[in-house]
Image 1 (cartoon, helix red, strand yellow):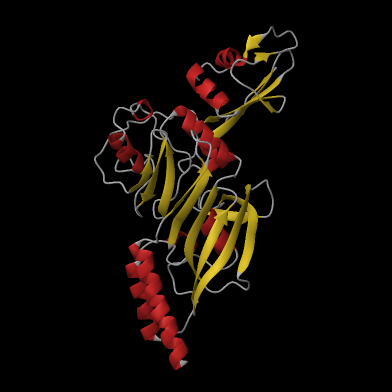
Image 2 (cartoon, one colour; image 1 turned 90 degrees about the vertical axis):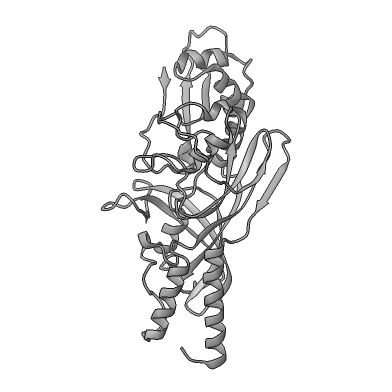
Length: 352
């Protein structure tokens, strides 16, 4: 008996959907066979090298125990394997696009992505993506020389979100890092400017995130698993500016638009987030001078004020914990400075 989980790949891919589970149950009459060979027979489109890399990363289990490629499959064994999603063929054109590379070694690299850059090619975004830039930078790396539109990607962030991304440069690194993301053991924080002021300085937002039933470009938070996937965001208030608040977010899950959808759900959309209603004046006064001030802030930061600030994980080769941090980009920093000055002026003069 064979069970295999497959699902269609949406244009926007959630982090956990960059990896998929397969599950097999060995027949009662199964003869002893190395598990890598067994899986090659079961998964004809997957190379033995990829299967061995998955095993070395601890991504193959038999009866819920991690096994090595040399394990001999026995009758009725329950086998599960976590693999990066099957390659979607796309013409991947290397392009000489500047990258802000924070760190690089032979196994991985950390990129601080600029706002406005799409992470990988998709319909409507055929080139000028982060992956096109990586294909040029990593010229000669086999993972970036084929037609896979997502080589090396362990996770993703939205086009207009800035910040840190880790890229795997080998199949093993991709599998090893992917397991950490899949198990939610990656440490990562974001900073966001939101409309309004939460009732508590620290909190947790949960719910089932799924596609909006009327507009599939955005996500909604539902109260049941039939409509979405469970999600958890922890937040902490860093600074208050009268009508907006700077918060730090720590993710336990990696759903599409998670932070943006979560804060819209609790009534505090991200500042200038057009998809979730944050590009309007949601708090403050009715005075023309205030409206002009907010419009100036929108002009300074013409996108959702969200930055992927830090990443911490276990390195695939050294097996030691590594941590990377980044500064807020200029557009968000300038916007915050304007709000800080406005808030201080308002406090001193006690007027709007």
